Length: 351
Image (cartoon, rainbow, N blue to C red; front, side, top):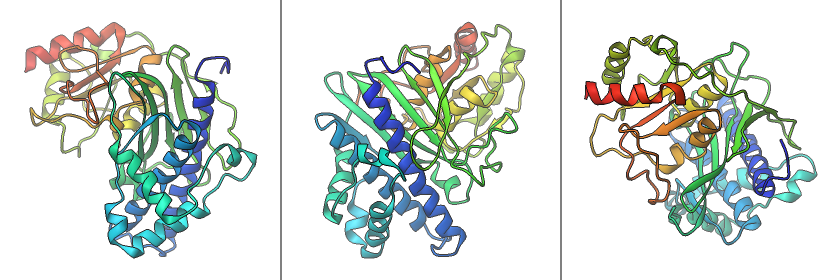
């Protein structure tokens, strides 16, 4: 993509640090496969989450020290568990890109610095005054430990507006043209999907060193008929009302069941970008439910750059300036602009 846009440095650092965090998560999965870490408890997920957050925040904070950082984890569990702390530190201190690109990033030099960096993310928030990096070190923890699909996510939100998003899918295998939990990249490091506001969306294969060439993703076809809707969803999601989703599809005359089922919320945006789907809807089971910022920031931007509209269930734009959650966003509709309004009206009618 054109490197003259105003976020060129931010994008380069973001793509490199997501790629480095990808290498770390792959090391954890390899340790599980070899029996070094016990799959029956939560420790592999825990060390992957903490270690990836530390590496991502280390790189971002060094490059952009004035920026706020919003991350999912804090260091309490590591401070209380010496074994987890040692495992996490070993991963953080041993994971590097294998070429000169590593010099553009930063890693903590001590365990205490690692813990402090993790806590930077725990204290961050998005508002209308600041510039915030939002990250999810492992989106899809339940599927990560099973060697299925998961995502490493990083986005830049400036005064409540998404400016760039980078989603790394370390296990993404696109040979079938669709994303599937169990069809994974066994040999490589998956793909990155990324976007800069106003400049389109792109993807590249990930590797172990310098960033590989990227190519632009085509915009989504602007469908007008419900029969052309292709949903991505998750039957197992505890926060979504899958029965209501089915009722919506039936009301519209749209195909059901959905063609692609993915646990990680951010991967549903990837499925819209490169996995053959075009629509994602979330009708919560609980009226008080609000999504976490890190489950959607960046992914929403990618969908928008491809011609989709992202809104709450009433059709209102999503406000990213209200803290660590999408506090004013009840549910979500992501669909090509040409049919988004039909979905909003259908939701009103079935609810």
